[in-house]
Image (cartoon, rainbow, N blue to C red; front, side, top):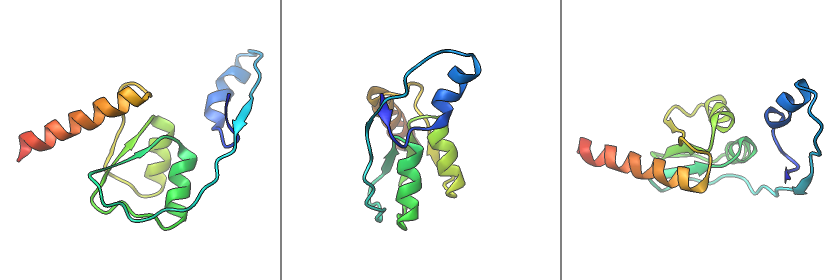
Length: 110
């Protein structure tokens, strides 16, 4: 179960291996475009969300991008974002851990 905008990267390996599955879309995202971020971090939980943010002229300012995984990070890179962190685990807890790590790094540099 996932978004109607779900990435083919999730299903392609299953198809390749001949694994039968149901790809059930349980919601359709409604995108509203991006805005200027005035925060230390901007969290992106999907490639579609990242694409929408930047297609709506969203800007990160000085915010560091946190991508939930490699597919989302790749989209951020396509959008020209260079300062991207990826959590070890693609979960809400993983994102929180990554932000806390980044804050500790910033504190130790200053």
